[in-house]
Image (tube, rainbow, N blue to C red; front, side):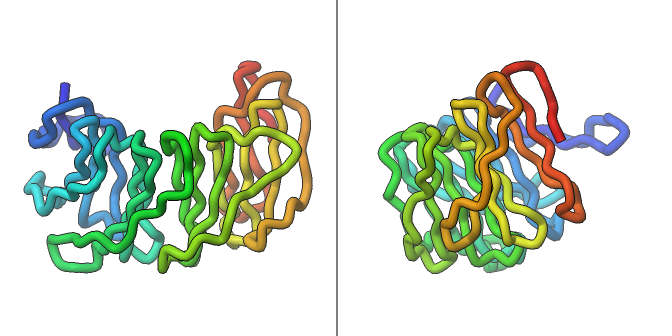
Amino acid sequence: DKAVRLWTADGKSLRTLFGHTAQVTDVVWSPDGQRLASASADKNVRLWNPNGKELATLDGHNQTVTTLAWSPDGKILASGAQDNDVRLWDVSLNNAAKPLATLDGHSAPITALAWSPNSKLLASGAQDHTVRLWQSDATSLGTLGGRNELNGIIAWSPDGKMLATGTYSNKIELWSPEKHLLTIMSGHSDAITGLAWSGDGSRLASGGKDSAVRL
């Protein structure tokens, strides 16, 4: 319905934010909770404050913006789109944002973005079956390439020492930040659909198209 809605934790509607002119595809809060970013099929990203005031429109993509990721230090917002690009935005400014860089290594729409806990590395997954690593200054660190086609499901461990990636071939691959393949985990009978680390990093949960959750 092109709207962003804010709710209390117990389910009460607070306000509706209008501004996008097409389907809203993703929403993500800044780490300090003082700004909300929303992505849309209108090719834009919008920033809002908790009271629903629009702070800025981030215009740069030329197709639907599919996914957003705020760096843990709150300084950079990454956006991925169906134009195959990842864009970095400086959101350290008060109530504003400016473009930093365009990361154009993928050859298919972006499906996932994930920052390392120290905000130094960004992982991007796409429909080209690859995951790419980038430094926060936009330097490309190359592509993760294992024995299985990666499907864009990615999750950093809390200590930033491992990146978990899902595959279409039912496997989970664990990588080091230096792009070394650490291990391959099997168990699912269909493609991986979700990954989540426990807060202390001792457990990884995975969901699959086989209707199973594994730890």
